[in-house]
Length: 240
Image (cartoon, rainbow, N blue to C red; front, side):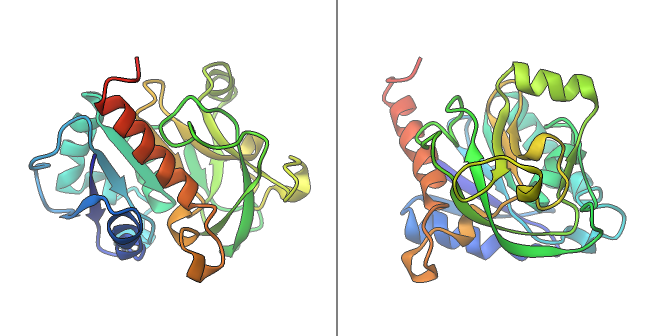
């Protein structure tokens, strides 16, 4: 699997993602500029990553301007063809604005920017991102956002639950899902989701900021290990 990391004006986690994918995970990774109009040498077995940051300064609405960057037409086409797309924080916001994921990310319920470690619980193993995670474990992964309140209408929320598209929920260190463990007011404690095709993933917490022992936390590395391992199994024809 090859990874492409899209860099938008205002991205500030692009090089973190490039480092983790290339140096920590030892994968082939290529930076992509937002004004590019194509995804050269990428096929549907590869993964395009939209990193965190403040694309275009979040001046209109987080992700609303980046969604119209030239490269996004190719990213949308790539996703619709079955290619893997992973958005983190601002990348998740961009995916929602682009219609690749349902719902929107609103201002945090306390109207503040939040930067801290949170705990998230994987809710399904039916995705590349979570297939190798422990459903009984809480993973410590930091957040850094002002617009992380996941919102969707009641029918969409029900559809996400019925279709097993909720990837992560905010929880306590022990995995308890309570009002006190929801840092931003997200409906149903949602921290990450996937699309119906299970090839587009979005999450607000930053796994790339918790992927090395030098940082004192490698919980986020488990997500990247899941992606790589499952992609390798798929390439060898071991997945149906």
